[in-house]
Image (cartoon, rainbow over all chains, first blue to last red; front, top):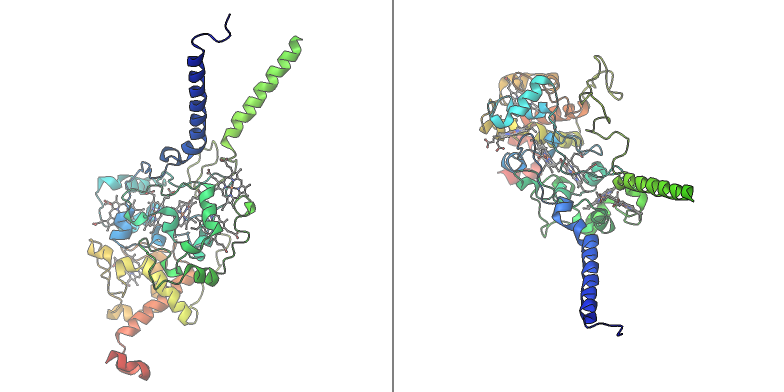
Length: 216
Length: 175
């Protein structure tokens, strides 16, 4: 009796193909699935109670970020605008727009509007806006071209590798302090170099990638 | 040998339970983040404080006007451009972007009434609002209110300045 029957070659080839296929699927699952847009939610704009447009308010009307995100220079959180902040303008203009009905109802019933979070970190990560603003990291470095977004979409993965890529070498991401809130800022030949800004802001990268900086 | 198998199964089951619980990887911890409702809470957020409660660091009395320095004016210009310029315009003439889109026209800061108004009046308008203008007390701190007032005063003074007010070495640039 022969050990290998006539179909042994076929089985062997099928088995090899199967194993190779399984390895490829596994590698894809480990390395590719976490970075595809569906998982990172990059470019994803969640449904909001009011279709608020940064493009309209920031680029069109020239309103500064701090008019609405009032805490961003002072605290860890940027702060979301209260209903009263919308109403400083919308008590007089666009007062009958159906789009703004949730706003008026929120004012009438004294219940805050519940915006859907676009950017959110896990609870074990410590993040602070104020230090980044004070050291000349512009909003668009982390939030993308927000001045051109009709609906806010997520521009970065917020993965640890992304934080680290900047913490290891922040120089190319820095800008002069008075341009931090400018959503259309571009580096020009007149801008001080990254190295000059690093020195001006006194940034040292020696321990900026220590685990304890972001996991406290 | 039955009991040994029982223990093994129980052990595996609890390991699986712990493993499943750890899937969250502590991304949601039992601590309160800003904008988060307490877990299982029925309360409305934000919980409105009882009447007469003040912030811990709120000063007892509103601060008096500080001396005018260049730094104060710079701060005032920055805050004015953020919070007031959308309506009052960057020069205080009342032709800001929002007014061009239909907001009621505020009076120009160069009107006689506002030129002669005491500084305290501007401070109070920021604190309490005025007519259709809302209060900005939630966004402009008391110290910043004085900075804005100082800057508005500087704007008003600049409108009536003559060539004689400019330092001699810079006059040629204007002539």
